[in-house]
Image (cartoon, rainbow, N blue to C red; front, side, top):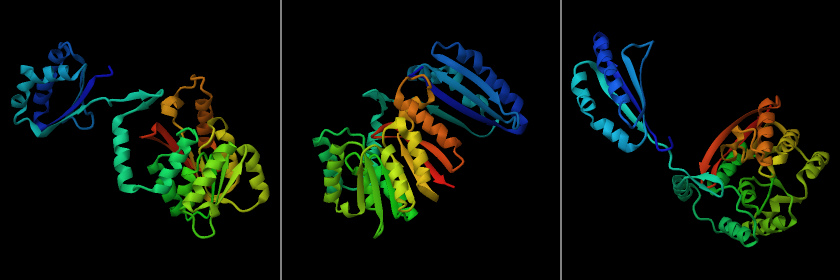
Length: 326
C-alpha cells in the first residue's frame, strides 16, 4: 500500500435528478472493483444532503489509476452525467509522501528544500551564527541544535513576550542561546544550563563572539542540581523557559520550570514527537519513554495550559510543546 494512490471524487446532483445520478454512479462500482489495480471503490451518499455523492477510491499504483481513467465506462461518465449535475464534479488525487530514512529517522528532500527557502527569507546569512555551528562541529559536538528557523521562532516568541528573564535547559554550543539573548532588552538576563564542561566552553566562546556574553549566565552541571539552587536564589521568576536537554528528565525539568515561572510565563520543550515514536509505548527507548511521560504530565498539570505541535524540516520529523503558566 506504500505506493497506493487515493482518489476522492464528489458529484453534486440536481435535486430533481438524484435518482438518475445514483443509478449512473452505482453502475460504476462492479466494473471498477473488477479492475486488477483497484483496491477500494466505495460510493457514499450524504444523509443530510442526498444530492451530494462521494466516491472513495484507492488504486495500487499510478498506472492502475491511469488504466481506470482510460476505461470506456469512465470516459463515458461525463456524457452520462451531462445535465444531471448542479455543478462540476470535484475530483482530487492524493499520493503518499516520498519519505526516506536517514540515521534511523524519517526525512524527505522537500522538507530540507522548504527549510532552505524559509531560511533565505527569514534568517539571512549570519556569520556569527554560522561560526557557532562551525565551532560546534570542530569540537565534535553532536549536530542536535535547533534549526535556523526554529531559533528565529524562539527569538520572535521571546520578543513578543517582552521577556527579561529567560531560562534555557541544555546549552550545547550556545546556538539557541544566541537567538534568545539577542531578544533580551537592556538589563535582560538568560541563564542557560549545560551538563558538559567542554560544551560550556564552546558555548562561552560563541556567546562572546556574538557579543551577548554580558547578558548570559552559563551554569555547568546537572540541571536537576542547578534548578533548586536557582529557586533558592530567589532572583525572580522567568518569563520564558526553553527545555532542550536529556529527554529522560523532561518531566522533572517541567516541574522546576513551572516553579520558577509566574502566571503568563511560557515554557517550550523541543523534541517531543521523536519521529512519531511517541505513539508506541513498547519501543524500549528511554528517550521516547521520557518524552511520553513528559507529554502526559504536561497535559494533566493544572498549573499550565498547553499544547503540542508536530513538525518537519531539516531536522527531520519531530515537534515541540508550548505551555503557558496559569
